[in-house]
Length: 445
Image 1 (cartoon, rainbow, N blue to C red):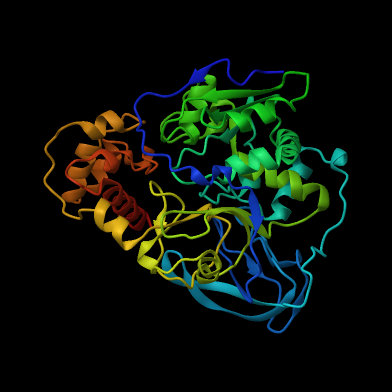
Image 2: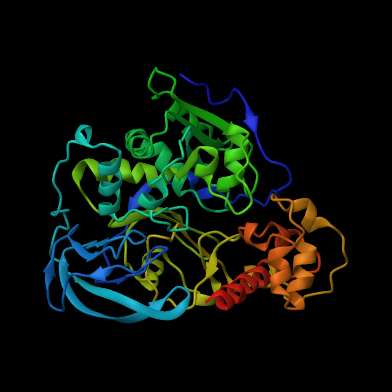
């Protein structure tokens, strides 16, 4: 059995923002069902799902309601027993309305999962396991929402040496993965076995930041004796949980610029994703809920909640005591999260947390004035990928987006926000980089 504390690894540079991990002591609790659920068909990277239900159709909890549209897509399942009210355009997190299924929940129903059946997991080979994972509708729960089955389908000609389980959760305020590793430990280990089967990895490395010793110790105590799964403690630093950085930290391998983890023999999965697969696959269930951290000074009842997908944001906030406005909310964490355009938007597969601020907090912490760059070099010292945020920012201001990509590796930036965090001039570098990427995508289209 591997000992989780035998080494502490980290990467060069990075930052140390306040953790605000107060909710790590809050056990997972189930949130009540809202009277009405809004289920966007595009809760993942790739093609939106295709509805297979119609208006006024009754569905039971767990029943498929939208099918995948090809490989880069994921199906949807009914998070509650109820009736399909309509299929219509509804507000989304990013602003524009998207096609969504609206489900009226039967309040008198006990809301048991009725659409499930036992599955013999020992009969599934690698390709059958990947197909079963796609049936669940599972996507990466760390926030990217990349379809899990696509990530596990390693292209022909590549051999996987390591399955890496990302248990870092370095984003401030978020503690969903921490609680899942503590409370769903057996599901996590079961899920690891299933994902190993899917991608063919002989060894597993589980990277956990050293501020989560209780989770690391609990997992290490349950590891099989063959030594194929090893728990590694990594230093608490942001953005330690970045996929490519974690690969280098745990294996010494470096993913090439513009490359993919499988090119260096690695597959990386979020701990929460794998644990939920461990719960769903043996029961042939679809993903209908997820754990969400509710935190921040604007929430009266912070904690980690198991929330049905499609639950409207205003319902969640009403249950947990929030009296602010949409402008004071962030979906995800403060470093890589997105602001909320409207309280009408629902919880989707990609929502790992809701950070509720207050007007006073925002006023105290955000100046809003952008000053000229003084070339202090702090952003260069913070960037974990050794990019040049200063030069990228200057090129962005001049709208020289092509030079940003060709000469300064813009596409390697994963928008962690470290440069913006340390900038004394308040230059919104990450926002500049996002605009540049969007403009480049438009040019290609």
